[in-house]
Structure formats: structure tokens, C-alpha cells
Length: 104
Ligand code: FES
Image (tube, rainbow, N blue to C red):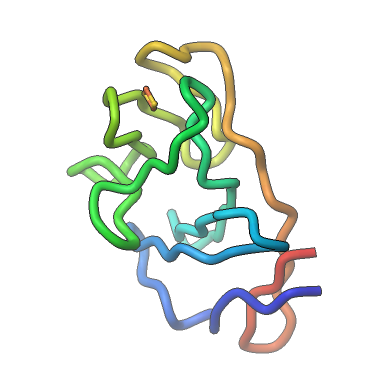
């Protein structure tokens, strides 16, 4: 298992980039739950953040790709708007042990 961050490192609406076996990924916290995905837009495969560690839209309700604005549900990774609508981000299995979030 690969430690990603401490449980209290992120507040709701915040995100964090990390790598897993050299694959760019990110984790975000929404409604006190963590969700992690590969940082690769299903449209063109590029990394998606607007700025370092910034993956959500302005309302912090959806994941947004900075390249062409595709929007994704935070809890499922499904693209609900944009050029890759109907496709989905690749989820990373995570678990929480003690005060740390791990990628499995
Ligand atoms: S590369 Fe993400 S929307 Fe086009």
C-alpha cells in the first residue's frame, strides 16, 4: 500500500496530486469522503489540473479538466459534460488506516 496523505491534510473541496508507480493521480475530499483517480482526462489523456493541486470547478462540486472544461462527478468519475461525456476517470482504490489515506 502506498501512503497518499494524512486524513486531515485536505478539507472538503481541496485536492492533492500524487504519483502511483509513476502514474500521475490525484485525491480530493468531498462531503468528508476521499476519492482518488488517475490524473488523465479521458478526452486526450492529458493531466487536468488548473494549477498545482487544483482539480475542482469553482463551486467545488465537480472535477473539471482545465484543457477543454470537461466536468466529472466527484464520487464516480463519470464525465457529465464536455468532449468525453459518458466516459469516466480511472479510479484509484483507497483505504484509510489510522490517520493516513493509502492507495491500495
Ligand atoms: S483534454 Fe480534458 S476536456 Fe479535453
